[in-house]
Image (cartoon, rainbow, N blue to C red; front, top):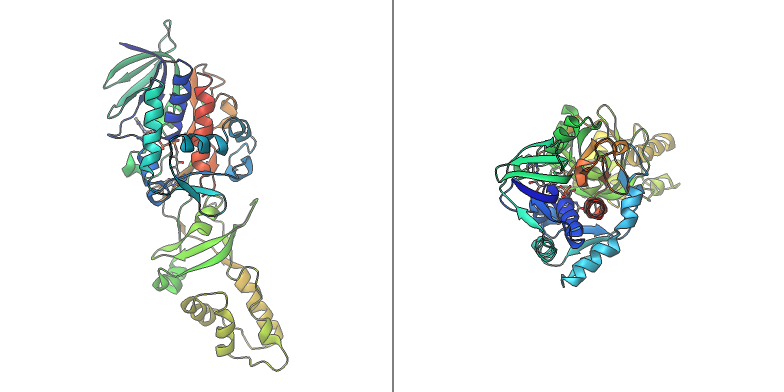
Length: 393
Ligand SMILES: Cc1cc2nc3c(=O)[nH]c(=O)nc-3n(C[C@H](O)[C@H](O)[C@H](O)COP(=O)(O)OP(=O)(O)OC[C@H]3O[C@@H](n4cnc5c(N)ncnc54)[C@H](O)[C@@H]3O)c2cc1C
């Protein structure tokens, strides 16, 4: 039988940050992970360069049934805090776009940084360890954690096992199962930041243009707080690229995605001039100002102005700024960057991430119903929720 002040389940961004904060306070922290190496998602993140934060991270950049829940943790551990840690370790980084900070060299540097901080804080990390069960101990300590490395007796369990995305990297539903076992509510999970699939008709219309990319404004119908002006990419099965991934987090099955294919420009205006030629060649020429040639040709072929009157040209312009796509679905957890939904924030204390029903049981990171936009927000949530719990356990 081992004893620890805190047992953290999952050695990802959130779990490691939590253990570091707890260890610095003199708490005996143990981190358990079934994977053979820690921080696997950090290693593949940001194309191998880890977009470790976004300098503009605010609660508005997250989806959650309670949009205010993330505020407290985000204020407790800010982008400046993770930047200070990255700088302390001499890791060079740069701002790519829209406040997104990436390592200049490799995501491995972030994992090494966390490992060193764990070592300095006296944190024990046990990888390749299967977690069999977490139960109330009923004795002096609150919980027993049964694992292939033995049984741990502890007063605090922090669940940091992440979401369901990329199962082949070791994602499991353990965190949700533990939450259910202890009677906590779970907001239904769904893949987010995920490519969308065309329906059959749109597949036939567009999929031969795989690889074509253009800037759009993407929005979903329903309650959508914002629109995303970024790149869109046609794939062999549907649409991807940052604009689509962002919109996918808000898309609900049965809903549509609306794309403005010519953000901020009026394409047809020149054709409306008194002596302008009104024919496919001049329309194509105008469209090329906004779209790659192949896409411009296809758009014109599929939605030609009915006659070349002012009314039909105006309609053509409107359609270009509001292409409604009813996706058939998403690429699923195999391709999703994150999982939306998760442990209901109504169950948790926003300062400590501790369960209101089960003292000593905390949930942090992606397993919680807080899902960030694309662009470093999800790691900022992992750091912030991890640090908040680590200061409380
Ligand atoms: C391809 C890709 C790229 C990404 N790029 C970025 C980016 O650049 N910026 C950004 O902000 N976000 C990015 N994300 C999202 C980000 O990686 C996650 O939101 C973040 O890692 C969540 O941290 P976490 O600690 O909660 O969970 P995770 O990092 O998923 O860690 C969970 C840990 O728990 C372990 N675990 C799971 N189940 C069990 C079990 N049954 N027993 C024991 N251990 C278990 C796992 O092995 C893992 O180590 C990316 C995601 C993907 C998939």
